[in-house]
Length: 283
Image 1 (cartoon, rainbow, N blue to C red):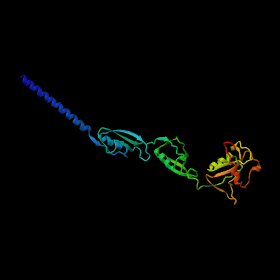
Image 2 (cartoon, rainbow, N blue to C red):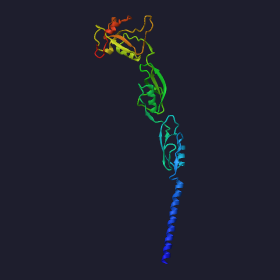
Image 3 (cartoon, rainbow, N blue to C red):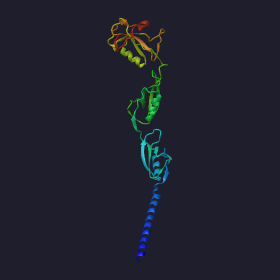
């Protein structure tokens, strides 16, 4: 009798254990089928798709999605620019897929300093800041190919000013001096300060000369130009020409008398070589 009871107990125990084991296996098998847990899936190509389309596709494949944003002026708003893992990667379902989408509103960034850079360097710097080269204008300048001014929407823009990415920056570029002829300016009767402003505006070089016996120069900016070697008019009465970057030699005196000014005769070149004025020491 006891033996039969023991056999019955172990039989029932084994049946119950087998039943629970079967239920356990079936439950987790069904759970895996329903959730696709552990299933290996290839990541689709999402680049260029709209954010909503990409998220829906990833959710259908049982992926979680993390969204970040940046700005690309060449891409459509909310288009997928980048994905991690990359296209074709084989991963387990349920993993997080990170996508970077194009922002609707461009970020504002500091305007870089393009002044004195070459056109190529300026173009690369704008590209790195997600901007574009707009119109280019050439002006006479000794620095051929160098950026002289940067403009945005018709106005000069200073380095560091905040500007939207994707903006077009107009550039003013030096074209060199070799082919630019100017009329020789008439500097006689002007102060050194006045003449310097005119000469600098025309990218010329002013050479100050003091002849022996003309007196002390103690206030250079307010000294007067009494003669100049390169005359405004030639022998035919036509405007004389000078190239940008050339030198204009002028004679100066601190307090000239009316007779000190020369009307039209060119001073001998030896006089120019006689003494060149050094503004630093006043001699």
